[in-house]
Amino acid sequence: MMRVLLTVCLPLAAVGVLQAAPERPSVLVILADDLGYSDLGCYGSAIRTPHLDGLAREGLRFSQFYNTARCWPTRAALLTGYYAQQVRRDRLPGAGGGGGSRNARPDWAVLLPTMLRASGYRSYHSGKWHVDGLPLQNGFDRSLVIRDHNRFFSPQKLLQDDRPLPPVKPGSDYYVTDAVADHAIACLKEHQQRFPDRPFFHFVAFTAPHFPLQAPADDVARYRDTLLRDWEAVRRERWQRQQAMGLLTCGLSAVERDLGPPYDFPNDLKLLGPGEVNRPRPWGDLTEQQRRFQADKMAVHAAMIDRMDQQIGRILQQLRQMQAEHNTLVLFLSDNGASAEIMVRGDGHDPQAEPGSAASFLCLGPGWSTAANTPFRRHKTWVHEGGISTPLIARWPAGISDRGAIRHAVGHVIDIVPTVLELAGLSWSEAGHPDAPVPPGRSLVPAFGADERAPADRTLWWLHDGHRALRTGRWKLVAAKGEPWELYDLSTDRIEQNNLASAHPERVRNMEQIWSAMTESFREFLNRP
Image (cartoon, rainbow, N blue to C red):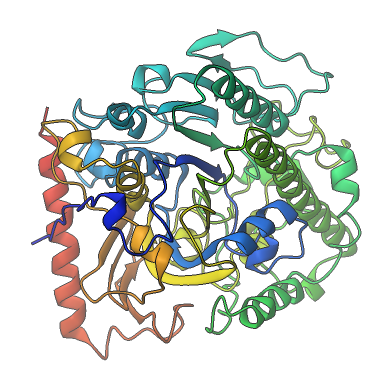
């Protein structure tokens, strides 16, 4: 049966891994959307991300941190401390749960801002929501919600402090990524003026680089010609940088030529024209038109990440101006791996429009998604490593003494809540709902002070859209929807190339039993009020 671990929250003075015993830190969690594992400079990319690279130089990078493979389950897990299926925010076979804003959490599954009120925190939200309910109803004090995920230049569905805002008129100079940072900075300024003696929790959830690939023309121009090159060469270069920086020691997974988007939209593929391809074909097999089209898409993807980094720089500058940088824990991560999806939504796609403009609707697709998720297999929605592995950067000058170090500790977004609660000086019994079960996560605070390899007793579970996985210590059991279990030793095969299922049938059976027992235990959660 599932082993459920209670988070032990020690007083800060007793935590030996911290360089001192600072007062309760503020916490800034920055979440990207559909960012690939290797899409930052400090994780192997050539995309300009100087501000995030600076956070990595001044703090830590985690090499084995995981999300849930999709946007809304990751947000549920990050803000509640539970697997999404435990709180009705993703589907279990034959049971309830679902995505988007459907399927409300049970009353006991409160969000982290509600928990932090017991320690005097103010909480702010800026950006994508994709959680049931509204932010101010769930403990946040201020919020900007981007509900329109189909338009970066003229979103039609926005909320401020849970109240609708007017739609943005097309043709304005509005850009969602900038607006998210503007709101975050405004909240921080207000906090400095009105609540200077209180710590804050700020959840900044960018929609970049999620499709549609749309970005300001000047940012796109910076990359347009530099990415007219073989996507597999780009992938090899990213992998080589990862090896050189000591982030990873594994090989480079083989490109899965026959694996396309997770959902098929043939009419949309036709609308996008002959430049689009829905398989990661060899670059040399593409026509000149296809190469140009694919390079333009990656240029916009890179521009969106570049622009997000620029705006993160503005937020970090605000922390410095308010003299909050020293005792603020900054965490940066992504909600899932890069996406192989190809579709057209929103205002449609004009084939004559400039790539990345408001009239275009482009998706990254499996060719460049394979490069973005270097060196791993598969993409968003799958629970192979490419779908669930995320960068995690942690910087906290007052509490993390290492600079530029890499942590190989295994972690998951369910660990964010116990981490923040420990730093806030709260135990679960003090912060959680009285009817809440014990959550499954572990605090990352020990990893802030020293590196540790995957503990033998750490078990993590995944299920999304029929894809299943279980990691116990160094072993991972994984199966794509409708396919048999595969078994990998991640200590030697993080890229999931050598399937050991036939060589270790007893291990497969034992791990499958654990996965099934955990799944069944989650059904019990659905029956709680």
